[in-house]
Image (cartoon, rainbow, N blue to C red):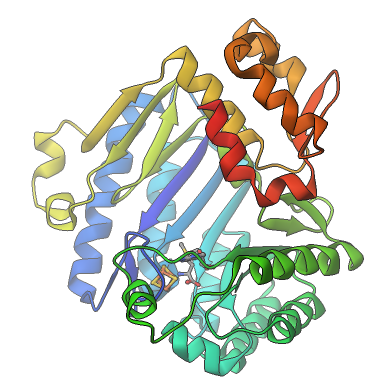
Length: 382
Ligand SMILES: C[S@@+](CC[C@H](N)C(=O)[O-])C[C@H]1O[C@@H](n2cnc3c(N)ncnc32)[C@H](O)[C@@H]1O
Ligand code: SF4
């Protein structure tokens, strides 16, 4: 299975972000959090370690690279004590520019972390400032170069487009400069205005203007073209990689494979059951909580019905550019996809006729035009 570890701390919150993370948390609190995390890992050891072995680990956030490297070292040691980790496991950590040092990077490598994800977002300093980022483009370049010098051979760069105030030429300049660095993997997300964020209020108040849909789509398609022209495989709606560097961990989410998520608010999907940990930081780090709860602070749990499984298989699987393997669908669910959606197949067939979806005997996937309205189409499979 895949193992996800959530580190909910950032230097400060960016203006657009609604991920579960907090700025301005003290080092003492980081330590208390990691203590809880290690208790949690130990607790799940008894439940799962004999049943599964781990072949991907993703330390995400938040900004895991802002905490002392020694804590990440202890975390990795805790994971190895409790789980059988495959020798060739993909082990990623999410990092922010300006938080990396030679010492940190070397500690990560020694702890077995072999994939680095760095959030550059944009190479335009004015936009980075509007977004509330803690770094400049140059800070990113410094950290990227340092990571290569230290020996990281598998690096992802996160970029965002459709940032208020961003012009097409500015987006393409960022993307081309990122491609020029030859990272093994690139993620490119269209900025979403999330309720409750400063950007959301600023947009409601009219102090920033959301990018129009047509420009957003234009940025997306131009970006995909540039990536493909530079030899990247566009393998998921928002992700591209050089051959052999698709993110194994994230592919598990898109292929409905098992994963265990530990840490604040982390989600898991194991043996057909979805569950998540508490989102309350004080509850998570309260002394004694793990003993009380018998090794698991589960805030929510749901046994998937067969229909849930079918819908989720399609919604997650269709994110991949290769789409769904319909033979696998039949093997898993004992019927064809047409059979599973008998009642509304006619309306789904229309998307195939209109070239939004391509369906062959063994496969079903979105066309590039289909990706633009994928959310709308997917609601028909729920
Ligand atoms: C969990 S964040 C963590 C990465 C790291 N803390 C950073 O910011 O560089 C993962 C990525 O999600 C993307 N992201 C965050 N908020 C977003 C939003 N509102 N819309 C689109 N993408 C977003 C950013 O590209 C970010 O790098
Ligand atoms: S985008 Fe990254 S650094 Fe910014 S608040 Fe979200 S998780 Fe933290």
